[in-house]
Amino acid sequence: MSKFLRLLFIFSTVFRLVAPSGACAEVLWDNWYTVTDHGRPDSYYHEKAELKGDRAKIQVNTWIKFGAKIKSENLGATAKNTTLLEPLLYDFRTQNEFGIEKVIDGSIIDHGKVFSVKIKEGDHTSKPLRAEMLPKLILSSFFPIWINKNYKRINGVQPIEFHAIVEDQVEKQVPVAEGTAYEMNADDFSRKTKTRKLRIEFNKIVAIWYVTPKGDAIKIEVPSLERSVQKVDKKIAEKFLK
Image (tube, rainbow, N blue to C red; front, side, top):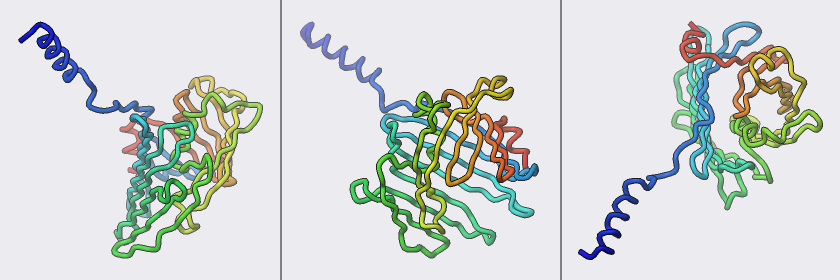
């Protein structure tokens, strides 16, 4: 074997060893939260957001107090990893009070022009719902990652507008709702936690978000509904409804 061929062989071997097998995922956050309703424990959830190549993904697993029982809901969604977060896929699974599984599957069809939603409950599959994909339209599930993508744009001078599909409101034909994000003056909590205090209005409901530079929330307050969301350790979350 010539010196050139030996060098070529060594180079190709080393390249195969070090070449990436695929894009590495960047985990934006992997958090646990508790939710109180009128001061009483209501639910807890695990939220994981990550970027992988040209895809952004969010997964939310929720446990909700349902009478004497606790039911679970599982949500997974995928969008393009751009500032626009163009929707790609949406999957939501839960069970009703009789243990019948309900599945909501959303996908983009007609060359990105339509968001189609299929609902299956038990053995029954309803006619797909359709929402026109308007410019800069995101899935509401991706709002936390939208904060990440627009963190520097959000300010206390002019509210930033956004529009999102409320993809879990199938009974309302998956409507599109308007929203705004606006930075408020810092308070004791935001200074203590080194977060930004944002006023978020979406679907005519105002919430106060305390967010890190990555976009994940440390605390969310919804005064009109008397609901509060708090980031906690996993062990605390899992004991929250017991």
